[in-house]
Image (cartoon, rainbow, N blue to C red; front, side, top):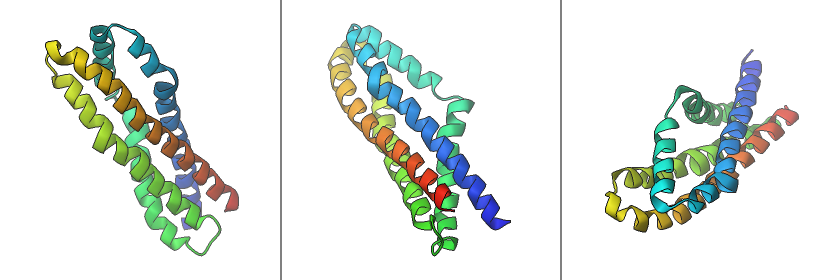
Length: 159
């Protein structure tokens, strides 16, 4: 029974990591480039609207729900440690928690908050830096999420 639950939670974490990685991949591969082609006020305004819109139950379930699953699976990996996939499950969990969730909270969210608070007269100066720095951190969390999905899938294949 416990093994079945761990299998299902790992499956859900693989899907969640992949979904979140896909969302971040879209931003890294074309959304931010498109916003960067707009005049600063328009690009910054669009990003501000995205930052408000992203706080919704569907995205939060994928993003935060996967983080919760990773916490549970990191603990469960100790039970599965000697079994095939146990170490992969721990690696996948830690990678998502640090590389996706942690990077988001420590770097992307503060940049979003800074953009939300900037005075319109300072927006153009911030926008150029924001695009570069935010996108660089987004590349990292994209990679972490996708690698986490791969590691969770590999753990499932070994189970």
